[in-house]
Structure formats: C-alpha cells, structure tokens
Length: 629
Ligand code: GLC
Image 1: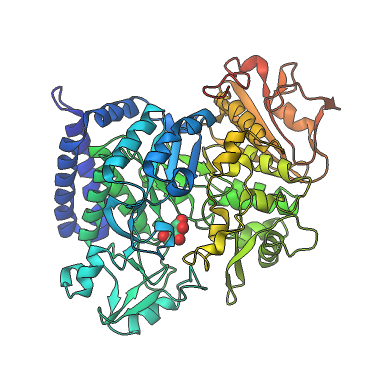
Image 2: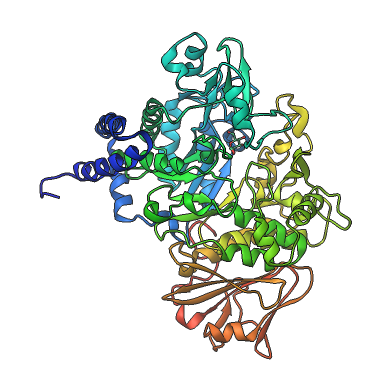
C-alpha cells in the first residue's frame, strides 16, 4: 500500500484480485472479468454513500475484528412484531436486551414480503422496503442507530435462494421479459425437472411436495425448493449476483451489520446431486463478502446452512476459503446433539460426532443455539451413529418419538413437522421449554432448560438465545388460530413476547434468574473467546460431555451431566489438565467442588465449568458484568 492510499483503495485492490480469481471459477474468464468490474462499481458507489457514523463503525471493527467472538457477546433472535410490535417498538426494548447482556440481535425477515402466506416473511417481494406494518426504511435506519447506541448489532435475513412470485423480477418474467426470466430456473416441460427430481430431497413434503411448480403465465415449470410461491433464483446468471450485492450494500448503509444468508446451501443446482453444498455456493459467498468488505468492512455474514455435519465446516471456510466465506454459521450439529443427549441421557454420540468436525478458522465463530424459529431435523450422520454402536435410523426414529411426546416415559411435548413417509424423516417443532419437559410439568425440566443453555454458552462460539427462552416460554397454544399459520406448526414455538410476565418479574421456576446467572458467568471467563479452540474429550462417564478450552489463563473444563442420574468427572481428566490444584473452582457455582477420590460429582442435569481460579485473575464474580444488576 502506498502512503497515500486510503483504506478503501487498498481493500479494493486486494478485493478485486480475489473477486477475479473467485468469479472466474464460477463464470469463466470472460464473464468473470465483466462481473468484477460491475461489482467494483457498486462497491465504490456504496462506499461513497456510506454515512459517517457507519464509517466510524468500519474503523472500529477493523481495529477490533474479534468483537463478535468475545465472551461478553451474546445474541438474541426474534420476530420484530412478536417482540416489539413495530421497529420503533423493538427500539424501545433495546434496554431490555442490553440488560440481558445482548450484543447482537437477529430480527426475522422484515423486508416487504408477499401478502400471506409468505413463510414468515421468507418470500420477499421487495428488498428495498420494510414491511408496512413494521415501519419504513427510515425506521430501520433509526433502529440500527438506537441499537448501536446500546452496543447491539443488528442482523437481518438476506433471503437469497428465492424471491416471492410477486417480486418485480418474477412479475417481469411472467409478463414475458426474457432478461428477467433468465433470473429463474424455468423449463418448458418436465424433462429437466424430472432429471433433477431423481436426486433432489423435498424440504416441505407436506405442504409443498416436489421442487418445481407449473406457472401458466411463464408457461413453464419454475424451480421452487420451498413453497410454490418462493421462486429459486438462478445464481449461474451473473446479473443475479450483482442484484444481491447491491441489496446487501444498500442495507449495510442503513446500518445492518450482519447478514444471515438464508438457505445458503441451496444456491447452486447441479444435475445428479442433492443441489445443496455445491462448491459454487462457497465461491459466491466469498465474492459477496469481498464486495461487502470493500465498501463496508463492518459487515459480517452468517450462514444458515442446516446441513449434515460433514458439509457444515465449509460454511466457515475450509482450504483456501478458510475465514473468507461466512464469519458465523449455525452449529446445527451441536443443536441436534444437545437434544439427542438429553433424550438418551448419553453423551457418547455427541462427543464422537463433535470430535469429527475440524476446528473453525480462528477468525470465525459458530453460532451456538438450542432453539431457533425453525423445526429440528435429526441431522445425525450414519457413520457417527454406527461408530458408537447405534442404528442411525432407529436413533433418529427414537428422537422423533421422544420429542413428539409419543415415546413411553418422555417428558417432551413437541409436534411432528413434515413427516416424510418415503424417507422416514420426521422433524420436530416445539419451544425449548416444551421440548425440555416444562409443558408436561416434569420436575427435571428447569435443569434441562439451563443445561441446554450451559452447552450453548460454553461450547465456543456466539451463543444466540431464541426469544422467550430466557423466561422458559412453552408452546403457544393458540398458534394455529391465524389461518395463514395453521398448516405450519413451527408457529407453536414463535409466540408473542408476554411483556406482562416479564415486567411482573415472576419467575416461579427460576429459569430467568438461572439464565441471567449463566450469562454473567460466561462474560467473566476469557477462555470462552471463540478463537480459543474447543476440544471435545472422550467421555469417561458416558453420561458426561467433556469440553475443554485451553487458554493462556489456564484450562477450562466444561463438564455436563446429560442424564437424570448422578454422574462423575473422573479424576484423571482433572490431572491431565493440571486442574487438581487448590485453586480448582466451578465458575457456575462459584465454589470449590467437593472431590471424592479426586473426582467431581455432578447432580442430574448439572454442569460445572472447572478452572484454576489462581490462574484466572480476570474472572469477574457473577453479577459484576455490565447491565446485569
Ligand atoms: C430458512 C428459514 C425458514 C424458511 C426457509 C425458506 O431455512 O429459516 O424459516 O422456511 O429458509 O426461506
């Protein structure tokens, strides 16, 4: 970099090189070069228009690129209308979030969708405007500003696999505009669709079987992976890439800091495959991120790839993509294993499966979560199940039975979502509290709710809480009352926030207080920085998941008893880690654990975060974290 070169120019120089190399692989040498120049022009214009306060944010993020990896970072996800009514209403709740310790807020889709049904907003009709009942783009700008003043970054969905049938591109295509028709996958007859269908899975077999929809106006079959009104866009058309780059840059200039790349796995279609996780998905993500980083370096990407464990690491980048695709990605595998462990009372499958994942690049972080707005699909690899002596299909069947409340002895009260008779797949809806036993009134429910959170908060990554879980909300009994939701039981775990309960301070089960305590403890432990690698150890006691983090401040051993019986952290584990010292403390209880022949007992569903307090001077006592008191 020459002395006079600005940050922008130097990012542009390096970014252009990267874009060329990346896009040549997708579009070939000629078109690749053209597209790069179009993207560079977009980045230049967006940077010129970037407001001063966001440029300051860019500078801060460049200085402190690990801001989202820190132990004090906690995320929260909610539907804007169900949390705050409107965008202005969400802004009024910023201090509630800050008080909880939240530094990152994911609001579910709020750009203008088609009229209902619209898959909870995931059928976007206009990316340039906000849903009228929530506010305007000015309100969005005001919200990001308010949140930033409270130390909270806003994450928005970028629905980039499909648009609504009513989006202007689709409207034009239906009206005969050839250029816009080329934004979609349209086939005049069944030949190509049938060839693809031979290897394609179905995402919504109940309410949207098949992956193509006949459209009279198009006089063709259009690709619709999800619902028939969600038209997949064709990313092999470079014009589509430029459109989405421009949308990202415009939203970034409104103050959106993180983009959740919705259904990113599905972007690239290749005959003879499942059309998920194709290499071009990662090239395209890299290109979009490069453009965003040139113009607005504060921007982060979060991949929503709800895929099997083998395909997951690529979303944070493997090989030459390491650290250059998404900065964050949902740890779907951890989420599934949390529920598998709680149902089986056994940590061996989870330990084995989690050990198979490579560590994420040090500049990235997993999004760790127990629940989100979607259903749970049992993404357990056959090889992982077999390695610990389980029949994969039988275990998945057991989990569906357990969480749908049909297995003898279950405490869970979930709902079957999208049963697929052909594959035996039965996904599950339900809130964390209902799945953990609170709805059934099971005495172990609170301990399980808190244990799920301990796992999410201490595994390593950016933990994201799903709205309502902080007070242990069970399923909404009225979820089907809205006719637009009646066929989709995911609405059972998408309740409205009961602010009267929150404000009354009632916490009969102690979930709210328990969770706030966990959040405070996490903030004080430097070991929980996401750049510190997570090691999952072989369980000594099959009921105890052992997660180790080695940090300059000494090791941290997170031990989780996932069973309803007393279980043990073996003495040899403490010895191996050098934790058999006078300073041994459990950060969760704040006490020195009682040793029995050198081993630590864990009550049913209890956890301990064991560390040497003499080596962790920075550890703050719970309650001293910001905004907790
Ligand atoms: C994502 C969303 C889900 C939606 C789907 C289609 O998976 O999380 O709610 O149905 O994409 O957009």
